[in-house]
Each structure stands twice: as structure tokens, then as C-alpha cells.
Image (tube, rainbow, N blue to C red; front, side, top):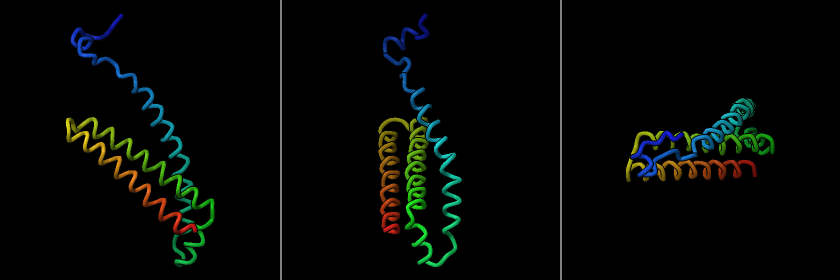
Length: 123
């Protein structure tokens, strides 16, 4: 039993077979964020409010640096995929494609800057 209309069969606009995979990846990222956000909040709160030397010493510890780096990467990748979904839903044509490239470039630039700053602090 086929649920495609004659027009969809002719144009090849049936199921893309990627929705379940994207949903699964989003679910995994959300679960990881559910664990990382409280860890990051407690880690950040413990290092907050000291002098500059104390904060630098705190974030130079491997545990604090790893939690901060993971939160930065996973959080921004999650944000990038959410923004891509919004762009795909509401912007079409060339503007949509340029917006997708801009969103990905912006997210990866923020990841690179954040990791560079974290490495600079940790070392």
C-alpha cells in the first residue's frame, strides 16, 4: 500500500527517510545537555566571584576545563542544529541556503573562539 500521490511519485517527493535519524540525534544531544548543564552550572558557580588569579587557577584544573569545554561544544552544536531547523522551516531558496551556511559558520566560529579562550585560561 503506497501513500504517495501520482504527483509525488513523478517528482520523487516522498519520504526523505532522515527524520528519524535527526530526531534520534537531537534526543541524544538533549540527554547529554541534561547532564552537562547542571554540571556546568555548579562548576561555573564554584569558580565565580574570586579574584582573577583564583578564577584562572580554578579553570586550569582539568575537571573544570573539561566540563566547560564539553558544555561549550555540545551546547553550540545543539544550538546550531536547532537554528538550522528554524531556517529550513521558514527561509527558502538562495536566502535559505546562505542562512544555513551563515548559521553553521557562526556556530563553529563561536566554538573555536571559546575553546581557544579556554585553552588560554587552562594553560
